[in-house]
Amino acid sequence: MNTFHTAILTSLTHLLNEDQLPHAIILKGRDGSGALPLALALATEIVAQKVPGNSAEKQQSARMKAEKFIHPDIHYSFPFVGNTTSNDFLKEWRQALSENAYMNITEWMSRLDAENKQANINAKECHSIIQKLGLKSFESEYKVLLMWLPEYLGKEGNRLLKLIEEPPENTIFLFVAENTDQILNTILSRCQLINVPNPSDSAIIDQLVKDTGITADAAKKISFLTDGNYRVALNMSDDQVIDFSEKLFEWLRTCYKLKSEEIVNWCEDFGKLSKEQQKYFVTYALQFFRSFLMLDVIDKDQLRFLEKEITVAQNLKKFIDLEALEMLEELLNDSFMMIERNASVKMLFMKNSIRIHELFHAARYA
Image 1 (tube, rainbow, N blue to C red):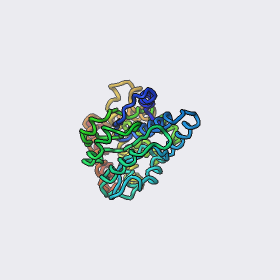
Image 2 (image 1 turned 90 degrees about the horizontal axis):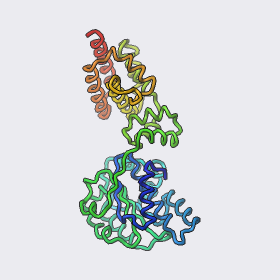
Image 3 (image 1 turned 135 degrees about the vertical axis):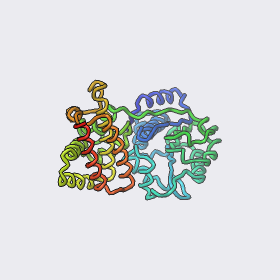
Image 4 (image 1 turned 180 degrees about the vertical axis):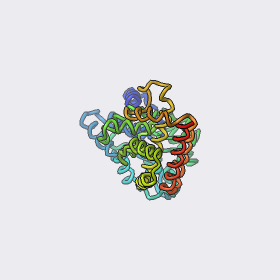
């Protein structure tokens, strides 16, 4: 399992080898941080490095099973719907992990055709966990419970307190959380908290090129828009690699000239993009103008600009003053919200185009 956080994994694996790994760990990371892939990688190391006899052949077999999410001593728990347990969704879970271990709860619920239902980790699931961990391990010396998003336990987490405090021998709890404020304090106090940072731009660029085969320049553009969220980066690369910079520059040129046929054509083409692509475009435009604000303040090597973007930004300086820049940001933020609310994108951007035309000419002739 690839992970951005090899330093954390190495440190925890060292503790494992020294028999000092905490028995209950919370890996806390924002959406897209890679906390779940890190937990999966750590679970793999636990069952592989703690096999009876410690033979290379058994270790390799354990890793292969863990990487296919079928190792009998790694137990998974996660949010779901209905009065059932995680066991009933293991097929979907394994498929989801194999395709994208950076998924969020919305994407997971979509896989279950349950977008409009309330997810939870219920009492029945807690009893199932207690039962599973009460059994002897099958192939490894250790058992692992990997729970994704323990926030969804709610008060049912009280049912696991005794198990976490007094676990069966050689049992490790790995909790992967985004918001520890929603986890019972009684659980938090029994766990070692490890903060998992979001990956850097450079790490996202390298991993995107490796995982998707897109160019380094395309990966760089995407990384600038994701704020360290690799889930969003993967989704953007899948939506594929519309040249948002060229689309923005084409729009700005069209706004400046304000020829009705060109405006209508641009807005119609924009309306054909997916909703997510439209939001990515607005996000890119916001990032571009925020970097534009810093054009004369910091060294160009520190700007989140590619070379052609710097050239365009410098040419725009005579058309956009600080007041126009503030209005542009407000307009784009409003547009993002309107897209999310399923507004008519064609009408919205025709209106935006007229407003930007006015801003350009007001700034130039002021």
